[in-house]
Image (cartoon, rainbow, N blue to C red):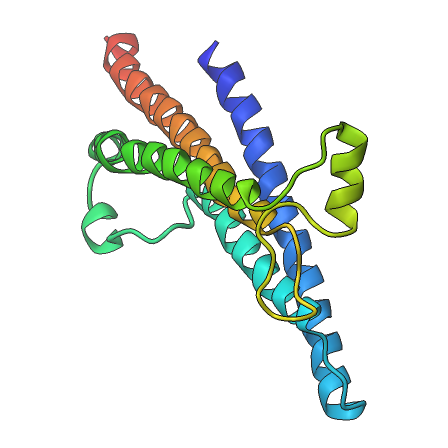
Length: 193
């Protein structure tokens, strides 16, 4: 059962990593387009400049869960690497339960409120069709203060709770993996005797 849960979570997190990579490629393209436009054609776009900021934020935020899943996140390897697999598993479990899970829950809670406040600004259409039209024309909620900037700021702000929900899923996957390691270490002496 735990193997199945871990595989499902890892598929979700791998897809998130692929999305972050795709957004990074798109970000490089937009920055290249902006630079060429600015220095070759003397034109620039505030909307594209803001979009590049939003994409950079999304790449970073969505990439966090993938980094935890692939163990490419920053940790104190000087202390960690010299320990046995059992001690490493316990360090990961305790650190995840004491630090990562509570922080993720706080960021989901406050991030959702942050995004909802951004969505709540201004008038909203009464129908779903009206909301869709408003989204693509005048925008819903908070808008950029710069002329020519992006509408619908709640979308980028909603990436914050989404990304920490994915970090929370990474934490669950990590805990399952470490429990399996501890369980396999406990099985070795029994099978050898």
